Image (cartoon, rainbow, N blue to C red; front, side):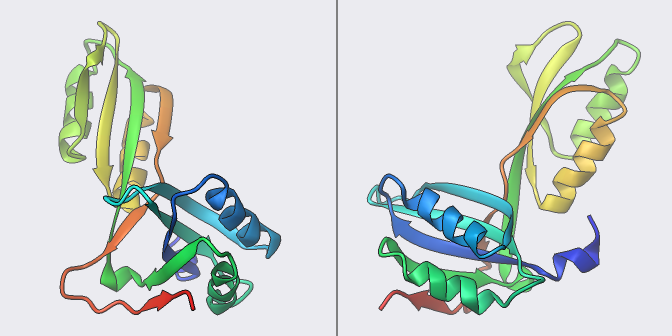
Length: 176
């Protein structure tokens, strides 16, 4: 990934009501404004009535403030925080199914060890296996590149999730 490109990427974390259609309204609003969603992850929080949406957007063409203002027009949005890269911990998960031979099995084990990847034991045959790994986007990119020397059958990544680093003061914008 081009490091200069990442300068135009911003991570927004929105706390929203956990209701049908909220995600569709959020993504539709962003798309209608011409912003590109780089990554999107959503799941309920420890409070079943709320969900947290992590959105990485490319704001090269327009200011981020406009996205935030528009999101607050949606009644189900409770709060939004922008997480600067220096203030956030971000992670992605990847699942990959890879074919291997006895000759390259040790090389595959080495790739997985370097990426802190794990073989999903129940998803292993004599010539293929499914692995799981988590890490930063750069680490997941590197794992994808390292696995490309093997026959990759499936490769699926989740998109980023993010939290503020401990001790970081992140301004939270609340709906009025």
